[in-house]
Length: 175
Image 1 (cartoon, one colour):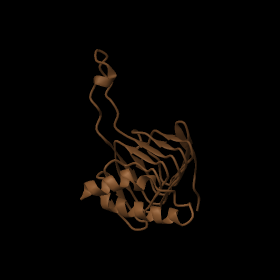
Image 2 (cartoon, rainbow, N blue to C red):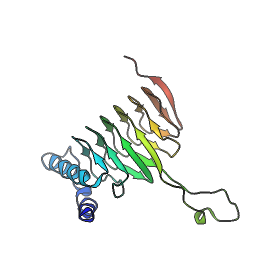
Image 3 (spheres, rainbow, N blue to C red):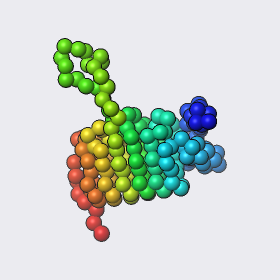
Image 4 (cartoon, rainbow, N blue to C red):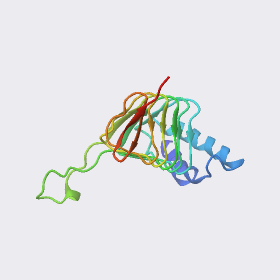
């Protein structure tokens, strides 16, 4: 049955309009969310999945309550666990794994692939447009904000606002 849900998502629902398109957008968003509940390892309530989101077969994807995956989101070679209240803008990429390149006597493309990288995103996180989360980042802590266009290469502490390439701490959120 999962194969049918995958075919429905990647063959049809993924390409339906964004949620902001009048009338049909909201229906499309709900349909994508329904399919993702069937595909993800675990999924809370009020999931929003915008158009063209890619997450493989969903087996390595766990999502809490009120999480939103932005349009054109891509998750490649990652085992992802997302907490509650995630806001994600468009064009965000989670990249994991990679290739071993330690031997110089073998072309890099012929060396073994590295295993999938884990990524834990805690509650109340906001990820800006075109942010890229690379394999060195394995944990984005509670309340963090990732600025638009950031390239995150290491873990992000609680309530930190990070930005840039490579992303660095700009400041911390205050009460």
